[in-house]
Image 1: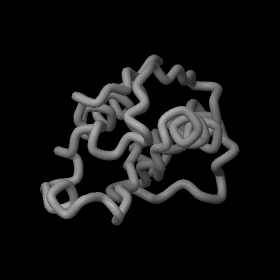
Image 2: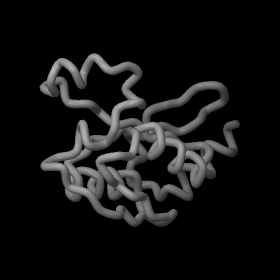
Image 3: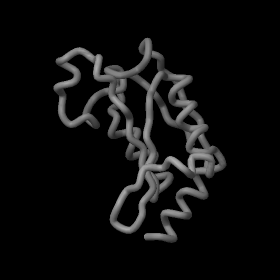
Image 4: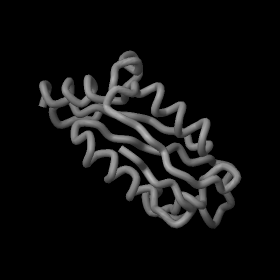
Length: 117
């Protein structure tokens, strides 16, 4: 999967793309509280454009595959674009934050969510 990271894209676009590829997983972006007030007051957060939160305005393509672990994907977002992320796995009707199993591959995480669902 290739995710295009550009200033014009909305956070929700990235989240939807990721969820389409991994339906039992969800990604969220942590928004820096030091952003200008005008940007912080835009609601909801998903409607922010990536240009509002990108480190140094960096753009590019992020390549991930089902064999990458959650930690690896989070590190790619951080290293390449300065984006901080949280990942969640579907568990019944809940979304549980992935912490203890961050070394599992995206495929393993997604399959685990499918089994519980």
